[in-house]
Length: 186
Image (cartoon, rainbow, N blue to C red; front, top):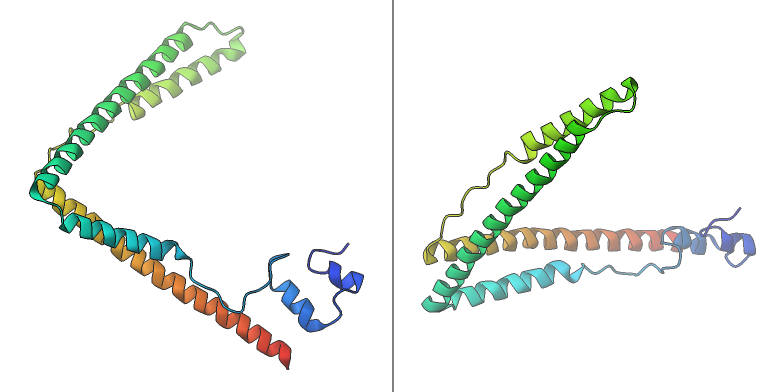
């Protein structure tokens, strides 16, 4: 049975080796480009980060204070949400633990199941509910600004490296296609 790569050979549509080789070197219906371009994702991310850095460097003192205040409020909100989620999770586990403990197995052969359910819930309570998030420490405007700059710098370095790798990959793919096509001309 022919495949997507060999169907045209079977039907007689492809009779030349060059056409068959090009057919096999590409994904089913997509023609091979002569040149590959780097994905624009990394370039776009870098432009956005540079824009964010420029905006941050242009922030007035009152804007920095407001952004710091918002950040600190968001951290407290997230902390309280985590505490609430932990409490709700513990309550669900403990409710189910009571139900499992109250359950009467229908036969002696089911007794292991009751013990298993109880042990599973006890372990979940022990491990999932023992985590207590650290209370957030309010940042000063200077700390906030430095942390934001450091994060943007980290992202800038990461996406710069990723863009370099993407450019290199596109160049290698382009060279591979050119070498293939040149070999098929001989």
